[in-house]
Amino acid sequence: MSDTILETAGMTREFSGFVAVDGVALRVRTGTIHALIGPNGAGKTTCFNLLTKFLQPTRGTIKFKGRDITRLKPAQVARLGLVRSFQISAVFPHLTALENVRLALQRKRGASFDFWRSEKALKVFDDRAHELLYDVGLSGFAETVVTQLPYGQKRALEIATTLALDPEMLLLDEPTAGMTHSDVDRIVQLIRRVREGRTILMVEHNLSVVEGLCDTITVLTRGKVLAEGDYTTVSKNPEVIAAYLGSADA
Image 1 (cartoon, rainbow, N blue to C red):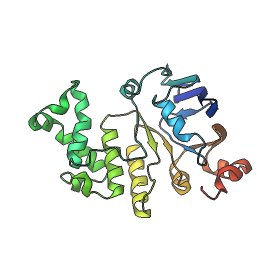
Image 2: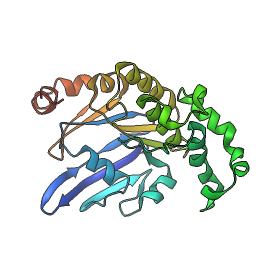
Image 3: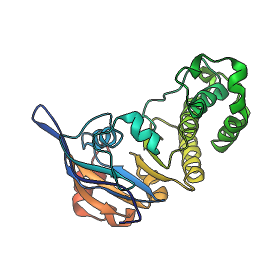
Image 4: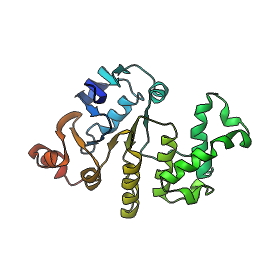
């Protein structure tokens, strides 16, 4: 369908006989925020790794914008506009916030060894880097070394470096994990701001975040799709309540 940006059919991943993802059919509509939820061990992170090609499926297909990306490599799908963030913050801790974003932007130079270029050569990216820092609420922290940023701001910085790749679709792996209530609110507002012109697929345990932010929710359990729909629909599903919403670790 023309409104579909990412689609899987029969996506399966086995590890030495253990089926971590079992025949998952996922369809993400362009311009939406789509959540992937489920109890621990449901296969959410494995799905993310399959979609972004850090793992290859045992069988099944993955299509992005109608193109079969099943056998592509992570860098190839990133260049197509499908980019992920990670649950653990992945920024350079001893560089400033500005330097981190600038390094992400340098990819547009098209040179393999830009990392070693002079400070002057990289300053051409300063204006765009400052714009991205503003977008994620870090405009006052451009010269702050990452080790001095609190956890929530480090996650915001990681999103800024991800946005520097100008992704058409953004995959966020538990963007509010380990955050205080104020940091959660800040990240939710950030995701709302950066969704314009993009599609977002996110793994998230905080159900209040999912309820207020996501258009569509896919519930996984034991590697299979249990239910799908908006929050009202899935939250009233008896199987979802039994498998996820009513569990102690949800």
